[in-house]
Structure formats: structure tokens, C-alpha cells
Length: 343
Ligand code: ADP
Ligand code: MG
Image (cartoon, rainbow, N blue to C red; front, side, top):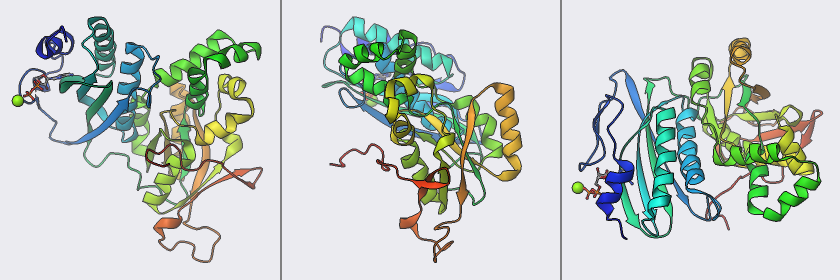
């Protein structure tokens, strides 16, 4: 490496902390932060590996943005406020141009979400990033997966399926020409690419709905797979109306017949799915209209094993997400979403 490890850290990752909650930032053995006494600390870690979590051709800005935003999305899923993060960066080489672009993009998102970089680790090896985000949430106000109740409505934010449609295009350059012929214009391709590389962590939306919702999750592995986590953790079943799913026109054009499948099982959307007790549905719809947030009611929480002889009895293995179209059961091809080590 032409640039030493310490020069690299000092040049690209060390800057004057902007928030007074940071007592000691990058540069000492540990970071020191001051957390609010009436809040809980919330933390989550994600690792991204080149070629597995982002295509080989991704730019430094795209890598930084996707890594950080997907991590922040976990904080959104708990209705937490982003505060601090750490970065473990493994690089094949210390390329100043790459580092300049990567760190500028990363720190600009840090500014956007008021989430301060307070430390990390830098090593040499195949390109891999691990980010740990730390957030705060008012005590006992976090949204969790295990709090859905029978009778709740199920809402999602934004559009579903865009992430999977984008990946179709990003992994197969030749398909871009096909899409162009199929009448998909550049604006739509750019929109989808943006959904993949710059997913918008739903931090504000989550805080707005938190007081009126029971359970939440961010959709990273696919709607059905992620709702299944809520169903199992909450010991309920969930019924989804597939005709209600919000699908963007770009996804529809690019994915064609596969659009519905993408909305149900495609990963990488980083939208929120959350459950709302009946008495708060009108309020959520009001917030939606006021803020122009595009939240959609897509289903409801029902009793565990509804309609079966053992209905209502705890049975962790059996909680299910059912999909319906015109009131008929609709079969979802891939219910499990993406899983490492699965094959
Ligand atoms: P130590 O030897 O005590 O483990 P390091 O040499 O690994 O410390 O790191 C020196 C300082 O730089 C620490 O404050 C660490 O948190 C920070 N740091 C290292 N790598 C990064 C990075 N990629 N981003 C931000 N801070 C980093
Ligand atoms: Mg040390």
C-alpha cells in the first residue's frame, strides 16, 4: 500500500465530529458517545461482500450508499433514530481515488441521517465492508417483530419488487437493450438502479407510525419471507391480498409477468412492513395523505392456524403467511427469500 493504514484513516475517515453526543470519535482505541438516559440503545451490523451483495461493476459511491442505507434500514425497522456508526473496511489496495469517492459518499449519507462515523478497522484483503449502526429509541417504544396481534392491518411503505427488477438489469447488461426495445425508457432504468443502489431507509416514516403500530420489519429478503418472521415471532398467521401490492410501473414494464413474483419474493426493497391495530388505521391513512408517503394496506393479521382444528394454539413451526387473489389461495413460488448457505 502506498498510503499507510494510519494516513488512510486520517485522510478519509477522520473528521471533526458534528454532534456533541460524540465525546471521542475516530482516532483513539475506542469511541466514546453519550447516550440519552430516557432512551434505549439499538444496534445492528451488516457485512457486504463484493460479488455477493453488490455487482463487481459497482462504483465506490454505489457501494458506500447501498451498504450504509441497507444498514440504516434496520434502524428504521425498529423505529430508532440513527446516531453513530463504525466501519470495518477490507480493501485489496489503498487506491486514493477509490477511497476519496467512497468516503465522500459515505460521509454525505452520514450527514443526511445525522449518523456519525466514530470508529472502525482497516485491513487488506478482498473488498468487504462491515458496518455497525447504533441508534436510539425512546424506552419501550421500539417496533419489534414479535408484537403483531390478531386483527391488525398489514401495511407496506413504497413499492415492492423494484429491487429484484433492478438486479435483473444490473446483472445482465444485455437485458438493457431488450428492455429498451420493450419500451422501457432510460428514466425508468435509472429509477430502478436507484432503488437498488440508494434504497431509502424509512427512518422518518417509521418514527411517524411507531406510536400507532404493533410490529414492523424491513423488507430485505422478500415480502413473504420477511412477513413470515413477524408471523413466527408473534405467533399469528398473516393473510395478504396480492392484488393490493404496490408495484411501480417501471417494475411492471421491466419484469412483465414476473412483477408480482418480484413483489412477493424479490429481495432488496428495504421498505417497511408493519402491523396496525384497527383503531389506528384511519390515523395511519391520514398520516399517509398528509406526508404523501405511499403506504398501502395489503392484508391482515389473523389467528394462528386460522380455519384449522388447532387454531389459536401456540405452534412455532406452523405460523404462515397466506396470499390470496380474488379470495382464492395464491401459490408463491419462493417463500423463503435469499439465504446464505442454503444450497
Ligand atoms: P487499534 O490498533 O487500537 O485497534 P486501529 O489502528 O485499528 O486501532 O484504528 C485507529 C483508529 O482509527 C481507531 O479509532 C479506529 O476506530 C479508527 N478506524 C480504523 N479504521 C477505520 C475506518 N475504516 N473508518 C473509521 N475509523 C476507523
Ligand atoms: Mg488500540
